[in-house]
Length: 253
Image: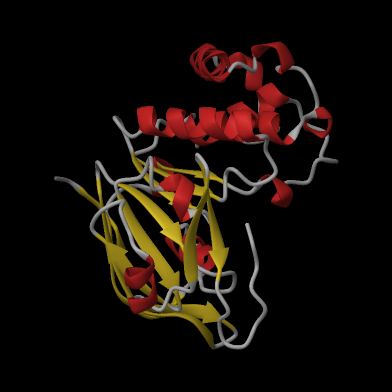
């Protein structure tokens, strides 16, 4: 199976403060990896390092595909909704060779690709709306289309179910399962109970990284990985609860 990314003994952080230490991870072409861990454990730093936004302090990160073959879906709360740009232009800006304010409507192939993705995500009716008018679920659909414009080999999603309704959350995970047939996926989430139904393997990030070789993980295994998460299920709806860790108060999700 083709290797897309290989990380070996990587340490990374900010202003010489180490956030990730001695992390190793290999991502293959068919992988669907769910990344879990406590707030501040290093999940976002891992993403930023892969995207080239954070330089490693030590160790190796070998990206075996072009950076343009990585699609990225940020958290919707990180997006400035005041920015005056329409849905169609956001989607088309995901094309690597398209500048944000270039002649968007002169490239027929790009326009057709954008229209096809928006139809697939059910957002063609809002193509001319400003992003400031959109709900959380609509924003996620728009930025997922943007992330797919280059037909990436690796799709990275940062907490994609945050700030969206339950209906869209279910649709999103089913869509990701379908997309996994043609690309690898790295999914950052706080909810191991939900993502375990969809991902193939689970990586716990809490300064270090432990890659569990299946989507079934027990509380005992989480404890052994120094990952302070507790799996809790209420009826048919899975949840997770952060346990007490380093004398901080627990958080529920």
